[in-house]
Amino acid sequence: MITLTPIWIAFPFLVGFVIYLLPRLDRYFALCCALFSTAYALQLLITQSSFNLRLLDNFGVSLVLDPLAGFFILTNGLVTAAVICYCWRSNRNTFFYAQTLILHGSVNAAFVCTDFISLYVALEVISIATFLLISYPRSDRSIWVGLRYLFVSNVAMLFYLVGAVLVYKAHHSFDFAGLRGSPPEALALIFLGLLAKGGIFIPGLWLPLTHSESESPVSAMMSGIVVKAGVFPLVRCALFLEEIDPIVRVFGVGTALLGVFYAIFEKDTKRVLAGSTLSQLGFILAAPEVGGFYALTHGLVKSALFLIVGVLPSRNLKELQHQPIHTPIWIVLVIASFSISGFPLLSGFGAKILTMKNLLDWQAIAMNLAAFGTAISYAQFIFLPHKNLNGEGRSRLKSGFWVAMILLLGGLFIANIVYYEAYTIANVIKPLATILLGWVAYFVIFKKISLKLPRAIEQFDHLIGVMSLSLIILFWMALVYVYGGSS
Image 1 (tube, rainbow, N blue to C red):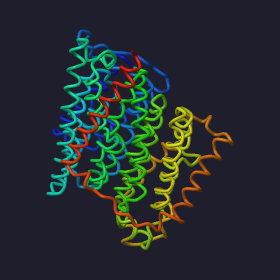
Image 2: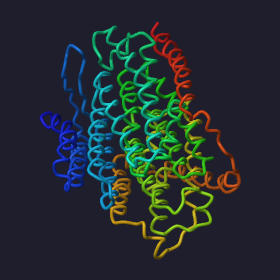
Image 3: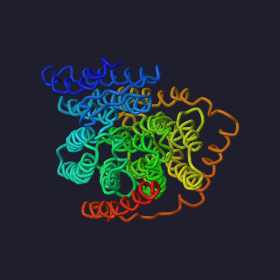
Image 4: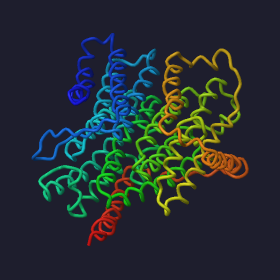
């Protein structure tokens, strides 16, 4: 495994450039890279391997491969493979697949870095590749949305880089462990960059517009894997340094509640899913020690949902309530919605049970409210009308769509083995009751409410202003939780 690791990291980048020499094989090369990552991650998880590669000892540049990274890498491999299959018969050119591979490789690198400078490089490459994929249609709107994402990301990374320099100044090392003993502003700056990059709490409100304006395959990759490149370092830091754990958990709870609020009241399907992504990232951070499994289940289900809404006849939920969708599409939509709501037989159930069991007492009420809100928001999809359609109603379905669904939704069934202990009578009753109450609340209250959420805070200048306010909050939290607790 140690010998294979450098090859696995470099392989997507190498193929991403070589692919231009053999453009007719671009899809095959891209799919092979995704499957290579999937196989590598499965090897890590099955053998429970864990090892540390020190690249530059004097600077603390290192890589850590363990089961936690394995869950995130597996998510990256499966989501990328599904998106490639979905796009197989489309007219997307070699440039699209090359950028997908570069994005795939840089996300893998972010999942194994345990030093701030290597992570910075990986996150910057992710930003560039994501921007190129968002703007791939070359329309004025897509270019603006891509530039907006790039500007927000770059501003966040400037804060992050200053924090990394402060860590190095304190310890002459960029290692994550250097946060201990660094000045509080270092932690505040680094965490602000990661919160914005990962789409977490208010600095992550670039998500709804970016997801809603991007093509479905790009939204699937952003929600399934790109945002997790910012989430993963927060989880890793919380596990490395116990004094940082409370900060990560606080933002997890806040993000879960904020995101589910957006998901309940939005009426655009892609914005509902974007708000849900915000919320589900909160579940990952709320219990860092089991965040890897939750990240896997969320990545699979959210990628499937974004691909599904891409073939619906409308993005407006009000219109979909009066326009039946093709029954096979409705079935896969319901399966995915059941999983993210925590329904048994799908890995979303086990992930939620495991997360709830690892919450602290003060988190329990808020996270149960977030789970309740999730059931409400996905009732909007589950109870859409459907019937078997002929002709134009099913013309948008391609074989690649069904291959992607088999890969993603099949993974949700197979992943049950990770935490099969969840299947006890007591554990099954609570999620089912939560889902049932959520459905009742949807029909009695929320289906009748038409609330247009203000979008001013999503504007670029307001997002930058929110980052400044978040920096002050993070600085205060660093003083209270880290430096106050150690004195």
